[in-house]
Image (cartoon, rainbow, N blue to C red; front, side, top):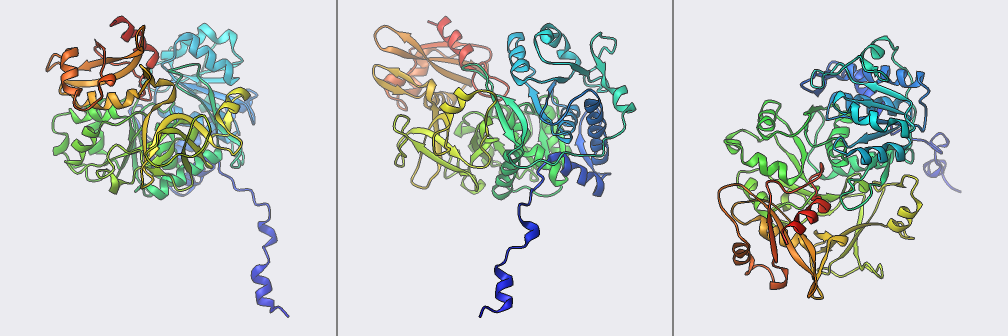
Amino acid sequence: MTPPSAARATTPHPRNSGLRVDLNLAAAVARNARYQGDSVVISYPGGDLTYAELDDRAARLATVLADGGIGDGDRVAYLGLNSSSFLVTLLAAHRLGVVFVPVNFRLAEAELEAVLVRSGATALVCEEGHREAVDKVRARTALARFLLVDDDPEAPADTGTAGWEPWAALLTAAAPSSSIAAKSADDPAILMFTSGTTGTPKGVVLTHGNVFWNAVNVELRLDTRRGDVTYAAAPLFHIGALNSFVLRTLVRGGMVVIRRGFDPKACLDDLVTHKVNSMFGVAQMFAALARQPGLFEQDLSHLRSIVVAGAPVPPSLIELYAEHGILLQQAWGLTETAPFATHLPVERTLDKIGSAGIPMPFTEVRVVDAASNAPLKPGEPGEIVVRGPNVTAGYWNNPEANSAAFDEEGWFHSGDIGYLDEDGCLYIVDRLKDMIISGGENVYPAEVERVLASMPGVVDVAVVGVPDEQWGETVAAVISLDGTTEITLEAVHAYAAGKLARYKLPRSLKLVPTVPRNASGKLDKVSIRRLADEGN
């Protein structure tokens, strides 16, 4: 006979059966508003906000949107630079169970129209500097409500503009909504459009679960703590800036220092003044910061978690910071992985320099043959595939893209080429579509770029393939300089000859003031190829 105590130990509690966990970020912020309402959550030049003030503004905006007919499953877009209004809009949308659509403020008119149309957004919150662009395309979208941010001194607004509702008066008059939609892991939270540097942007659906599991991965791998201060100067409409530290800081009761854009001098001042603990950025940001006089004489000992991603990081940059006790932590991921798939533990920064790290705790990563999908051995380059709860639910209204990106076993095919070493550390080689085939030999632009980036006087470099009658393609380099030296194609050959095979050496060189990159720091290959063609 089974003892009663043993029977009780193996019987599941009926009240836990089918438990639905609420992962809505807005609910977490509301909890913090209740228990630490006076704590400053946002430090912003246009005005700081406490948790109570942030929650109140989001609750009021939720009422404004709901009164306009916005409800569960709809899409609300935001167009503007980094600001507190960005996060207020995100939280208001989540309170209603609405999908938040952050829009790239650098888009051209046709690109802006495409994003607004494809998202199906029915309401838009916008800053003054982007209102005219919206007016040119609004008639061809599903947008029915246009709210203009008019209470931010950093973005002065013309409140007399026809067809736009200044939101300050609306927020003041609205009663704060008391309800917050409960959201589970599979419910869509954010619709984020990819950068589209090599093609038409696709809408990536990120669920509340994707956002949550990335936070868990970060929590288990990086040194972040309750009450931390994080720095947000990279564009928040990209997942790297938004979901690396910012959203999880709101959940954990910390403070976000929001800046409308990145300025290296202002960044240095902020890091010291606010004793920043965590920061996400691309390599170009940290290269510019390193050129600030006195950077390494400042007390930056509180900086515990600095993630550099979005584009390859020159080893020389990592070594420069490490010499002064600051360890830049490399990571790899995409919008589709929300964002981190791998991360190099801080203690491996120097002995695995150049590596994007190991898989995040709840994320699987493989390198496979692009044709057969078979896993490859260590050291063999192939396509990087990812599987895990942080991976997107799919592309918005795009079954063809979903079929191309996901295989039958649920692996997401990234389109990036890389290899794993014997220790399981991932190294990124290049984008699959960017590979150059010259005379039958494969040339990975990122490999050439890493070599040229360490050349004295070089600020930034991009490598692309250009058509060639004899070889099919040849290597072209587009380089920007710091003004301290002149560089010729012959000088490039002399520098790189001992580091690269002859067929990998650039056959043409184009010097430019700035190498084109998008807001996430990735090379804009379309513009770069155009520049390279001009150099031939």
